[in-house]
Length: 131
Image 1: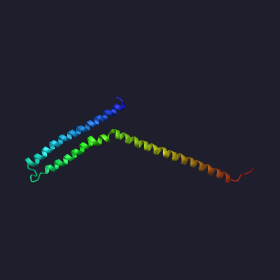
Image 2: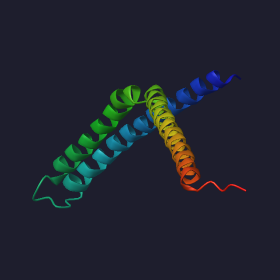
Image 3: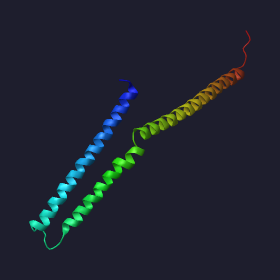
Image 4: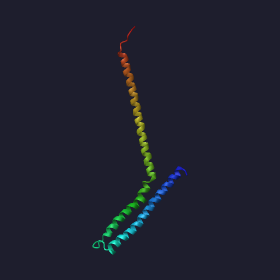
């Protein structure tokens, strides 16, 4: 299997796992909601107040967030988005490296010129000795 095909396969497996978890969450939500209703209404736990409505509403909100994550956010910020962001950051880092290398080379050149000039001054200041 080629690398590109392997990436596609892994991406598909990841999406299937996300959707599978979402379906499990939905089943758990349904069973849990029925359990909360039975607990409140049939078993009379906290029967003075219908608290199950708030619990189910909160759970439904979390379930909607899960749906948004799987079907809306992840397709836009999936593997393609990650790959583009990674490539963008790598290009930015390479630009910085090139700039730093140019700056280093320039400073090295200046240092060499400075040392050569200092050596030249030293040679000029020495009195010439005649034999």
